[in-house]
Length: 114
Image (cartoon, rainbow, N blue to C red):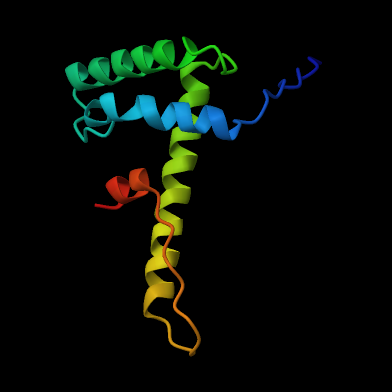
C-alpha cells in the first residue's frame, strides 16, 4: 500500500502581502473576471494569472506564491469581500436605536459586488 504524502502548508498571507496583491490585481481583473470559456479566453486567463504571479512575486516583501495559491487566495478574498459588503449593507438598514455604524467597505469589494 502506498503511503499518502502529507501536503506541506505554506505561510498565511500577511496584511502587507494582501495589500500588494490588491494593488497588482486591477491590471488583470478584466481578463480574470471574463465569463467566456472558449479556448482563446482560457489561454488569456492563464497568461494573465502568470503575469500577475510574476509581478506579485517580484516584490521583495512577499513570500513567493504559485499561480494556484494566488487563485485560491483570490477566490477566498472575493467571497469574503462580497460577504462583508452584504453584511454592511444589511446593517445599514437595521433599526435598534443608537448611533449608526459607518460602513467600512473595501474599494475592491465594491468592484466585485457590482
